[in-house]
Length: 186
Image (cartoon, rainbow, N blue to C red):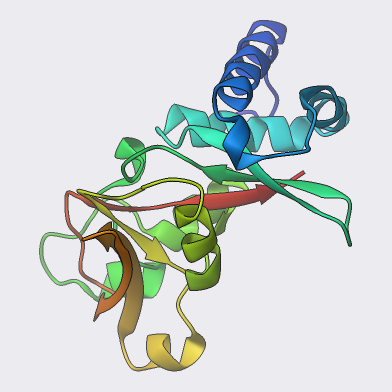
């Protein structure tokens, strides 16, 4: 099992990457200062580890908001397309285990939990799309309501024709162009 702490070198490199991305995409976090974000990150090494996992799997995490109620900064995967290191996964473990043949190596729900992040909800996915054009060629699993999941389905989203679409599939399905996007509160 991997350690959930970053080395000093990893810590410094991750903060540098996050700061650079933050400064490059100021439209995603108007009125938020990097110094405040970094100060919060320095007090939460567990969250830095999760951000490193988001980065390692191709998510390109960035600050997308601040929750006034909780005082938390909200990071989200902002890669243009679904994160490459999380593709070809079905929705959850039940779906993965239900496959008789050609089982995927992993599933979105367990991967997110192992990374310490949450799958985006449909509403969070739509909010992300207000900050840019994401998933123009790929798609992303989103948190599926229990009523749909109990019937064997799962939801995913993408952006086509300048519109965000929500679709359904059997939760056991997986595709080379589908992954999931995560959210982390710090």
